[in-house]
Image (cartoon, rainbow, N blue to C red; front, side, top):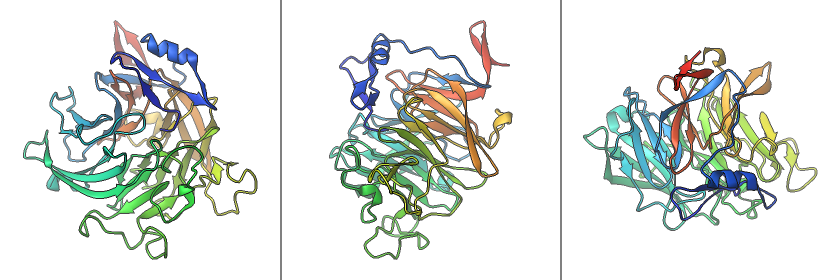
Length: 407
């Protein structure tokens, strides 16, 4: 997420989350977490969350392989990827990169994406922070055992030097065009002191698009907006991001949604119609729809403003989600779901005649770090912590005899 991040004590049983706003820490939340409790929040809409699997430490990404297996691959920040096979989490990790990954805070193993042809070629890609503190994008391949990757198959595609310890981005995702998209934060500190978000000569503060099926490691797609711009990095698809922690493509339309974590005031969701790159989403000129640097007259009209934003009254770090295309939540087909790391709120947003409106659907007690989408389009969320969990979004439910059942 952002500089208002995650800290640890030396006790494995204790998780402390610091919510920082101009240097202030929410002491009430710190106390509650240190005592092993969470602040209770009632449901606020017609959805609920149902525990699927627990004891998944520091869960930060949830992906499916698109191979027809129905499995979910769960990324743990400290370097392991484990498999939920539909009934249990397999004991043996699919891949263990613990000895390569620098964790934690905003570092660690942060993203996973499966090649569109994974069922035949076994290729998948990871995004992690290495022992030198830099972002690494690597390709691996599954072994003959579908539950195990080949740990010796790693091939580095891209390394990006990181100047500070925060704002890493981390998402990897293949677009409907078959290219790999990579989110990178502005490199950290506060206020983007190097102005990376607006500088086209660096990959930091950008959404990248690369072709992993051509070239020695990768190729730059000829349609990339800055492929032929002198002084610009050809990998750039969009720019002007602070920390684009989670993004997704609408599986129905190909449209792109990006959750960009704000600085001190605003959290934002950005939108891009399918295949329409080259956009400047504003940071550090703007934070959300407000001027940041300079404090006035920051937008000449060239910046793309967010479709949704909220103040830190409602949280501290946006978690981008998915536009729902499943069946279980029939009333929400076409709704874009997103959340906040600090508050646990889950919102649903809809577009009517070009105007986006968000409704709070659930006020959960989860520390959400990511959404996930299975092969059927059903949605999942993580609960981050040393005893983290995988939860499915379900219709509003109630407990009967200790069991969660849909109404």
